[in-house]
Image (tube, rainbow, N blue to C red; front, side, top):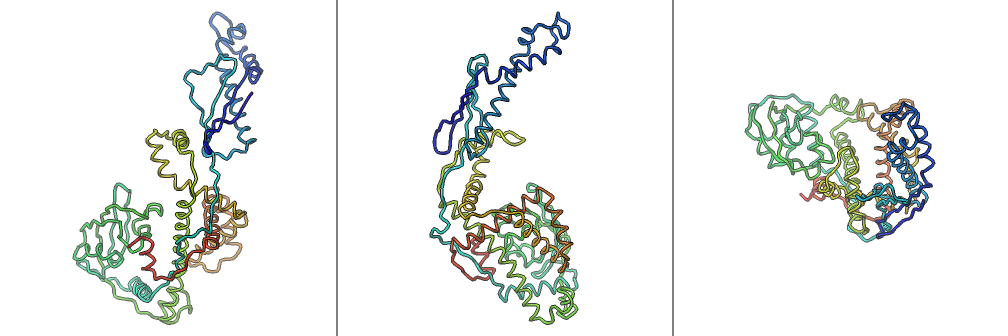
Length: 440
């Protein structure tokens, strides 16, 4: 067998394989011999059919099967021996005039290669690393929400600016159907004003675009996924099922102990300090996420390389349970190209900086995540045995391992970007951060 690579350009090649009779004749003959005792041809008893008739009836199909086995194995070994870094998998070229009776059988496979490129993590940029602070307005608002949450509900006939609403958000097209309780003040002013004066049973239609100060709140109140949150621009109906005002709860030791545990908060000042601490820890996570996304966008924009686009569009038509048309593959490629580019950049960044993910990294990350989740549900001091038992169960699930591994990679890349990209640090309030994030 002869096998070679034919370069088309830097990211596209063809693998050409020439198969001769010697490559498959032995296995074909073996299969024919195995077939003879079982062959049935009219006019002959089973097992008594002449070999030439068996070959005539079954030989072509057997030959094609054995040649395919030879080609598949040779292709796999060739890709490994040449250490080809492929995008997608080899695609056979279709030859409508292929002659199975030829002395030499030639097969061609298109391949797409990972491009060769370098990235400059220290390139000049305008990336900002935000330090988000909880200002007095935010803290006072949270104190009031706590008082309302633990206060006494007072039914109201119609919606007022300080009302709490219980109702259901719906949008049939997006499959949204979620019952929730929400304060009118949680909406942006334009949306909130639509509710004023409404009564139980009324339906209010609002747009999701800019519905809340932070788009992530759509996850809480509409139960849409994180992938759908940013840029979601649809209309949803809210059916009002209950309207309540609130008699605010008294800020006393009983309430503080109920919220944070006995003796941990003893005054309004302590409460505000605790709110500030918790809020800024949450804001830091959001700021890190924005930094990661901003660096991703910068690297994608400033790291130039070609992709085997036409090959990948053809390959997309062949993968998955549902085969795609050329038009559908075009749309899918456009949708996924940015993610593919960053996936390649991510791999290059890790290789350039010698970043590796070990099982200990994964175990440590999972342990910390489990402890945080347990703390959220009031179990602040679990034993090591309890935590490690949960960690072991989580890491026995391959889907969870994959998901957590992606998070570990993101965390390591974030640390790398903070070090190498040298972003400008800027302290802002949460409102200013939201404005910077969503252009509001």
